[in-house]
Length: 118
Image (cartoon, rainbow, N blue to C red):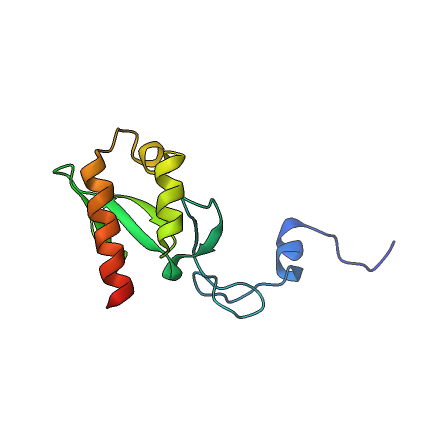
């Protein structure tokens, strides 16, 4: 008879390495950065680099620079070309699942110009 210990689930669990990771960290120690897709150019970019457009409960569309306001959101690159692409391919309408009036696009473009200037 062998003197080896019988392999049970309890002994197997002890041999599995455990990693003390905080939420949002990966094994290399770097924090994971949230990534979102631009509705204009369809590229995946860092969430902090993008501008969030939200639809509030009152069906108003607003630019959210903080990314923390309440409402359904869609992300755009801070570039007017991406806004034009989103208008052309109806990316915002698809994200919000409703038709968006032209006045909203005009006000969003004015706000983007103000952000670029400011």
